[in-house]
Image 1 (cartoon, helix red, strand yellow):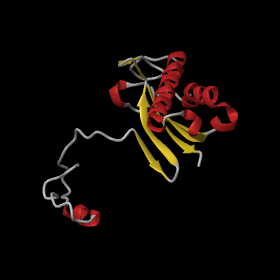
Image 2: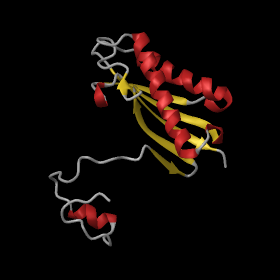
Image 3: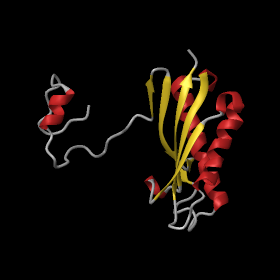
Length: 163
């Protein structure tokens, strides 16, 4: 359980705990977050970076150190990592009713504006695995200054499960 100084009493409400926090941040910054959370038959998947076999497949900014082809491969690997997380959590991807959304975050050089094209790598994996009936999804592709582990791409997702 995460705790901050002065918040040791577990019987306090969340509102009371928030009121006791000071404006100065303190506490445990080595927090492990849930890779997946379920809410009303939907699974929200935390962002996955371009890591395969415990190795980053590329690092740096897209449009500078990372070209389009490699960026799309990174997005592809991120999407595979998302799917593997879901599969591990629910047992089988056949339980997915549909893919609701992908979020694509692209660490971009200042003059790079083709984030949507990078996102095609992730979207293609989803469509290849699920087909258009289940895999057709909404998507946002956003350029950012940097990503964890200097990954060029990070992908998060929302899946809806069959009832």
